[in-house]
Image: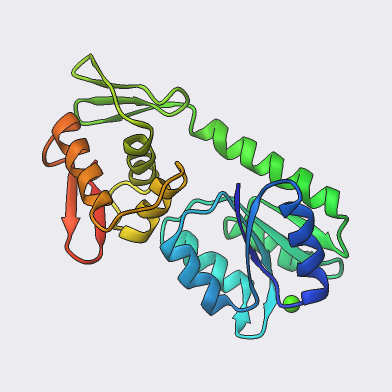
Length: 218
Ligand code: CA
């Protein structure tokens, strides 16, 4: 899993990162909301671990902001025990869970698994877009009832577009999805995948925003 850790206390962040990396997760750690926002705009994460008091602002404001951007990545708040109102406020603003500091490393790991399982369950349904019926769990696609074969990388790109359908998805997020399937991304690789997806799934399904990204037209 790719985990975004937003925490300014190195004494908490370092051991947590090491613990999660030992489990073969990719952990990107930032100590400011500004850096974290650039990261989450550019890349797809599986879960966000969010401290509330950061040097450049309030984690709750960040939470509201990314939910307003329709980024539905599960978010776990890392908070001190005496801030009960913050925890409730966080859940109301779209956080999925919270962990109380000082936290047990295995507890954080267990919470991550729980929220990710929950979010995966929400994606096991079949999504219908135009004449396409897309099964999120087995990655099968029917167009007008006929099965369409996609390569793993084409699926990776389609899945990221589907998760944020009707939104502009930055090129970097889609390139990260290709990269996740294990190869270097050549400069025109994304365009080539998009072009094959268009020919398989419908030529105006995916709209190009030149130099910015792509939108899947639902
Ligand atoms: Ca802090």
